[in-house]
Length: 286
Length: 239
Image (cartoon, rainbow over all chains, first blue to last red):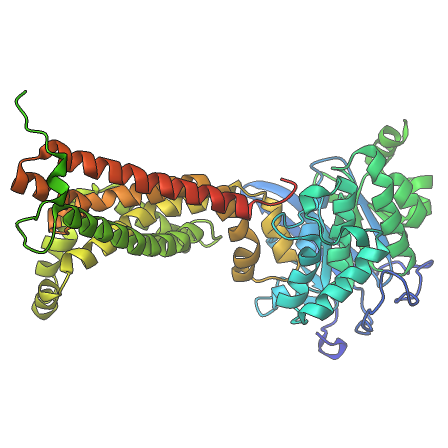
C-alpha cells in the first residue's frame, strides 16, 4: 500500500485542488492526536472511476466518477434513492459493484488480491443508525477493533479510546452501554470509535438523519472540528449548513448518477443542472 | 378400580438386587441428565455452526446449512434413533459395524449423537433467526472497522444473537431433556425406562409414573429457573 506500488490512476477526472484544506494532521490535543503520518501519495486519497452497480436488473449507480484529495471535505447530497449511500458504501467495499474501480490511498478495492479488512481498518465509517455494539460498554466498543484488528494491547486501546471520548465530550460515559446514551451521544461515540483506528479518511453516511433535531448540532460540531483539523472526509448528508461551513466540494447525485460535482461556492451559487437547482430550492426553501 | 396403593414401594428392594426402586429411578434420572447434557453440547455446537452457515453470504454455505436442517428436522426422532442404532451398523463396512455393536454403553452414545444431531437442526434455526433479527448495520459496522467475517460473528453478531434467542433456546433445552425418553426404545436405561421397569416388576403403575412425572417437572422447572438467572445475568444495560 505504498506510493511506489501504486499504479497510475486511470481516467479519473482530475480532482479539483482542495484550496482551503487544512494541513494533514492537527496540532496536539485535537481529535487526530496520535495520527501516524499518512502515506505520501501523489494521487487522490479516494478515486472513484466509472463505477456502476446493479441490484438484479435495477441499476443503482451509473458510471460514477469523482475523486477526493487528501484533506478535502466532500459532501454528497441528493434526493433519497439517488444512490449516494450506496456510493459511499462502495468506497470501503461494504457494497460490491460490478463495473469500474475505486482506489483508496493507492489500493484498488475491486482487486481480488486486496486485503479488504486491512484496507477497511484504515477507512473510518459512521452510520446513520450509529451501529454501536449494544452488548459492549462504550470503552469496549472503542477498544474491540483496535485490539482485534490493529493488535493493540488492552491498556493502549483503552487509553486511546478514553482520550477520544474526552475529545467528543463523553469521557464520563465510558463505563455505560450504548442503550444508556442519547442518539447524539451514541453518534459521537461512533465517530470516536472510527477515529480510534487512526483512519486516513472518514466516511459519513447520513450521520444526523436518525437524530432528534436538538442533537444534530452536537454531532455536526464534532464533524466540523474534524474537518478543520484536516481530516479527509466524504459526507453523505442533507445538512446544507454543514456543507456551506466546511465542505470544499459538493457532489449532487440523482437516479444513481453524479449530476453535479462542483466547488461549494459554485454549487450553492449557481448550480448548473436543473435537477440540482430543483433539489436545492426544495431543501433550502424552509 | 381395584388398586393397591403402596407409596412405600420406593423403599423396597428392586429385583435387580442392587438397591431399592428409588435407587433405580435415581440411576435412571442420572442417565437422563447425562444424556441431555451431552446431547446439548453436540446440539449447541453443531446448531451454532449450521445456523451461522445459513447466514453467510456464500450460496454454497447456505445450501449445506439448509440441507442439514431439512434432513434432521423432517424425520421423526424415533425413526432417527432406529436409523442410528439398528440401520447404521449394517450399512457401514463390516468391521466398523461390529465395533459399533460391541461398543459398551452403545445406547448411550447413540442417543447422544442422535438427539444431538436432531436438536442441532432446531438450534440452527434459532441461531439463524437470532442473527437475522439483528440490524443489518451491525454486520456492516464490524466489517467497516476491519474485523474479518469470523471476528464479526465472534465478537458482534453471535453475542447479540444468543441474547435474543435465549428464551427459545431454553425451550429447546427442555425439549432435548424430555426427548431423552425416546432413547428407551434403543435400550438406554434412562428415567422413563426405569419407571416402566419398576411398573413391570412391582405392578405399582401409578406410583412409578407419578414419580417419573414429578421428577421430570422438577428438573425442568430447575432448568427454567437457571435459564432465568442466566437471562438476567447477560441482560444488556439500557435495553
